[in-house]
Length: 122
Image (cartoon, rainbow, N blue to C red; front, side):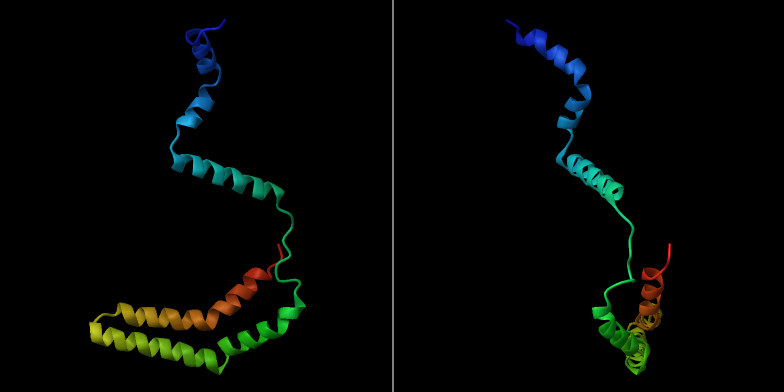
């Protein structure tokens, strides 16, 4: 019969990396599983055809794009800017005004940026 004293060093030497994995903390194991999953996902990924299909959503896309870059988008951009200016005056800080300018620009330009990124040909 094998005794535990003779078996354990054999396994300890042969499976040292497995033993280190078992001793790893839960967080490290979660990170390892996430990295492995991400790696497998990238290996199995096929070509992306984003923005080339889905004509059933084209009407709502055109409507929302028109709203954001039409008068509604300009009104929201102006409202965000004026709100940021008002908060900046009350707080006596320029950061709120800068946030208002950034928010207004985001409302107006984000749909155009998303359209150019999603429908880009790779």
